[in-house]
Amino acid sequence: MTWTIAWFDFVRRLRTVSTYVYFVLFGVLAGLWMAAAGGALASARVSFGGDKVLVNGPYALAIGIAVLGFAGVTVIGSVAGRAVQQDYEYGTYHFFFTAPIRKADYFFGRLLGAWLTLVLVFASIAIGVVAGAHWPGVDGARIVAHPTWQSFARPYLFLLLPNVLWLSGCFFVLAALTRQMAPVYVAGVVVLVGYLFAVNLLGDMENKALAALVDPSGATAFDVLARYWSVAQKNTEEIPLAGELLWNRALWLGIGLVVTLAGYAAFRTQAVTSLPLRKRRQAADPAPESARAVALPQAVLDRSTGAYLRMIPGLARLYLGEILRSPRFLTIVLGGVLMVIGNAATLGSMYGTNTYPLTYKVLDVVGGLFSLFVLIVTAIYAGELVFRERDARIEDITDSTPAPTWLSFLAKLVTLVGLQAVLMAVVLACSIGVQLAKGFTRIELGHYLFELFVLQMSGFFLLAVLALAVHTLVNNKYLGHFAVLLFFLVTAQLPTLGFEDRLYRYASRPDLVYSDLNGY
Image (cartoon, rainbow, N blue to C red; front, top):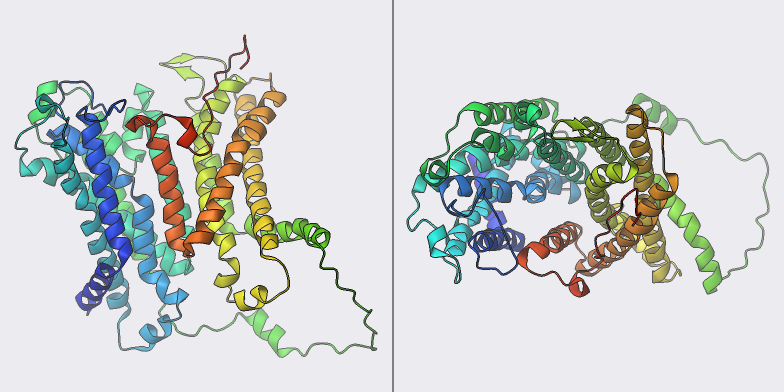
């Protein structure tokens, strides 16, 4: 029965457009990666540690497959989480939970079906690598004419597939227990934080062992393992499952196994759940009757534009209050704070030499890394706001009210910008806290306010407008999430592919250099 459910899910996924979109996307990304590494794309450069390292040799393939596969964290979360969350969204879980299906068959069948789909999606990376290595313009001296099958198999077996395995289990458990997709996306942010934290730790050679362990992708562990390989070794020697890479894989697969088994134990296949005792008592108590009749005042309807504009602050407070009180948002903020604390350990240190934590240095590190959180929060909560009424099944009521369409849109835009301002305030507080913790008391508040709330917020505002527009036009929350995040990733990589003109790079501004001597 487990295999029957898994195969049913896998075949159903083969009939959806998103599966082929993911497949083509990762194939194209892998092809562009290899073409850029081989010199086929002007102004684009992907380096594996020197021009003599073959771009499709064992070492380069391991790095490329690991990085490209881990870039699909959002895809893994979408496929694995939706495998179980869709039953709650469409109300079909009643049929499955009352059918003669064991909990183990349902749970592991759904999970296995999602895992098979992801294996198919990421198989396109190998196809894209082969196509990109033979792209017109690639330097023939930089490629292996006939790479061995182990050069592809080992990165998949040691890096990509273990990541898909443990991440799928964690994301599936989150969706099964919370019955929502938002916690899955939050977990994806936390995983990306782990990767960025590991990369930052690797800047200090004394932390290389810790960096190799905390990186959930395994790429940092492999980098530490092969850091001192010669060019000949990188071009000919197959990657081994040993040393830091072995310990990293064992650690994260173990974490994934524990989370999956714990989630299975906590998962309940109950079609009907009983209310808590307090709510049952509240439902049993009759509502108090009014002591006396009260005459209602005569209402005068005001449908002018000014009246609707005066409603925007109230609606924005309602939307923003819901978000700020939600555990998922608090989890995102906590993840960002932990990331700041983790990076504060190496802040102000350059190759072992301590420097003062000046304001512009703190902003470069803390503000730069936290901007990833702002982008992902903007993408996620733009969709949550656009589909807020539909998720609550009250869109028929709200759409039939006489309020104009722009009222809700503007209120949600104000909410999204307010959310970004809250995150900027968190960055401000964390940055000042880092400086004070290191004994640095020259706090430049004006510099902080100008950098965070003028320079960075102007770009984030444009991204908020774009995210709301995309979700409104796509009209599907999950495809909208994917489209917005894909846009962020593509625009961030355009300069490395040779597309540097800011006229077609939306919300892009010139890089500003600041120094204590000359200012901007």
